[in-house]
Amino acid sequence: MDSAGQDINLNSPNKGLLPDAMTDVPVDTVGAAPMPAAEGLTEAEEEELRAELAKVEEEIATLRQVLAAKERHCGELRRKLGLSALEGLKQNLTRSWHDVQGSPAYKKTQETLSQAGQKTSAALSTVGSAISRKLGDMR
Image (tube, rainbow, N blue to C red; front, side, top):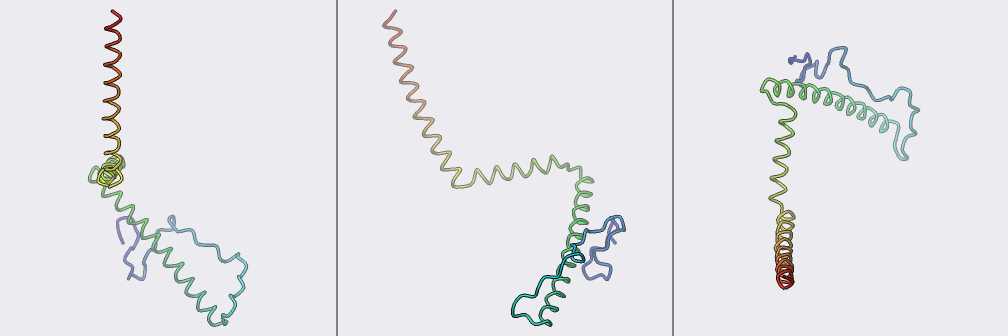
């Protein structure tokens, strides 16, 4: 059993068992009306598919329990290392921003905005010079 009290060894006969207070919510199949068999399925095929469905649903429940245990363990490790959720968010944002800056779309946008800024600056400079000349003529 791990520190959270759950056996996460998938080969264990106790795999995915949680303490009584922490059980997964099962899919409600008891109260549901039975679905009619799809056309072309024999009763044996239908029973085989239902058995496989039950097995897959059980595996999903086990995986959810294992994931919950892993997330708790991850949280414990982060806490012991002094890593806060804010620190993780900061790292994710930094990494994402770095990825964005490396993207071709960002580079093209940056180039376009740079050219637009240069043209706007030149136009404003021309307008400023014209206004200065007019003010100088008026004096």
